[in-house]
Image (cartoon, rainbow, N blue to C red; front, top):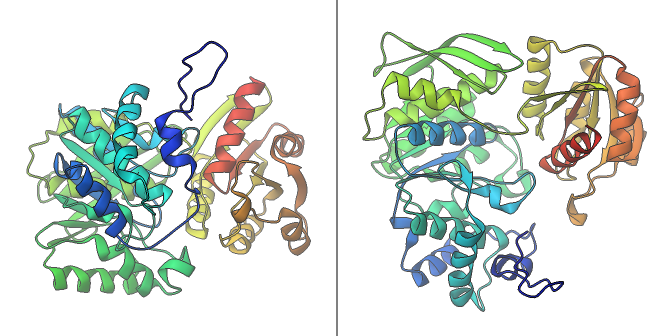
Length: 432
């Protein structure tokens, strides 16, 4: 977190810390009124830029990063708002591909502090307003904004975007979004707006029916990957994914490569390309290729090599994410054996995730991410008791060492949450 030392040896709390520090990271309250009130008090910075709004259970971050990279390559001043972060909160608010500068964040936080006194807005709501204010102050022309959770009542849904995208729908956050695909899809399709095109990735039939009904109800033109555009001839390696994208705008097909390994990434990026084609912009094939080739998105099947051997870190944190991770491991085929270091948040379906790991014949070392919020920490000891054959090592850094012993010349695979991946990357960097 940011700080401003003004006297040698004395640490002064920054405006960003004052703004966010009193708001618990995990507090959630549905509704848009608090966000709208703060934006109104700041003279509506969210209207200063054009936006693409991206939702989905998995893949929305990768799609958002891809859309932003292409818009930036086309010469526009871009903003990218995503969540959660890996290392620092500044990562969530990017201008032209880089985390917003400390000075800009501080100036905007000071403005927001002046109007937020007494507000019951949550951490995410305040951070969303801060992001929009930063974009306005930085002269952002196009912002790509990732939904935080759900869609309909997410703080980001105050936007009036030029296009929307919905990458995927799977069961997650059932306490908030519902315990059926139809209910989850209804919340996520809540970002659709009258007259605003919406690009859909591959959705289960049950979710697709809900998305189509929502789009028809509000008058949102619907574009579907698999109908209005296709992704074919996908090849995957440890450095990325190549595929042929075909659409009405590109009937001859466009072969692109993105440095994100996995079949699923071809569909995430393809959904992003479909959303880009809905914008009132002319984007040449070369701009699209160059933009996608420059995408940088850490913690998504990120392969590391060190003196101890190979390691893969991936923020997969639900059953669909773990399935994609396992599929990418099989396609990329890093050195075997593969040993999974696993730490998840308590509200995730860890039983299904560990069941998939076990069914794949992989060893799992269960641990804890020390940075996980206390109220969301899972119990790896209890999971170890339920899952015979797993290894319990409570400290994450020690778990990495134990996994390396078990893997030998093979590959250590770290997954479960952003907290887990960030701590593993810190430990692995320190060990270089």
